[in-house]
Length: 258
Image 1 (spheres, one colour):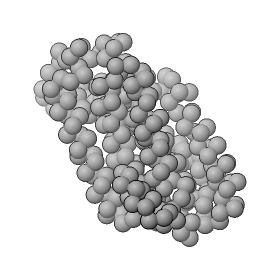
Image 2: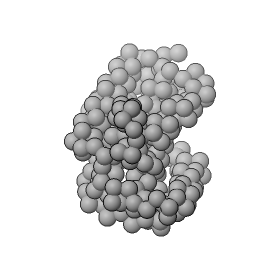
Image 3: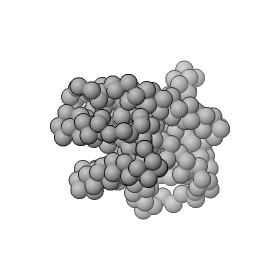
Image 4: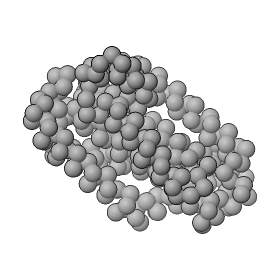
């Protein structure tokens, strides 16, 4: 395929997914905004007045990065997992991709692009809502963008892998509910790891979502419980591993050839 043909193929896959996302915006954008407002009201306004500051940061502002990251990862994951599952079992658009000369890496980029865009849009919307409750200083905007983009990419890749193996809608809903959400909550969204006992700190440091939340918090507030270099290394390694795994599965035709 020529470069122009590669671009047309990628654009077609992305446009198809974006049309679907915008068409059902009450399902794709609104739930995260409503949920975040409730979190800000309950955990920020009510509990924040009792807690005061965490690490020199007002508690309301402290919870913002974690809630934004929760919206980003869940939307990026569920968008790709759901879209892939539907294209495989319902609309059968997978067949059109199979007969095309698209290379595996382009299929990978096309599948995850919609999830990355949706995750970042929802993250920006939740961050915009947070401005009504807290005013982050954003000392490191570059790291804000990096962690938004890479986190959305990581979980879009995870959603693709989940969609490949899922045999029913239960198979794509169980991971966000019982894996991703608990990991985010236990990754320091509402508390500092320094407030935990030693055994709980060790468990938290083994949670990869801890580094995503703290890296984003560093960019947004200039505060982190762990080195930003470590956060970047962990995130880069996870993206590399997941991208390789997803590319290999697409190259082998796993989840495509039924």
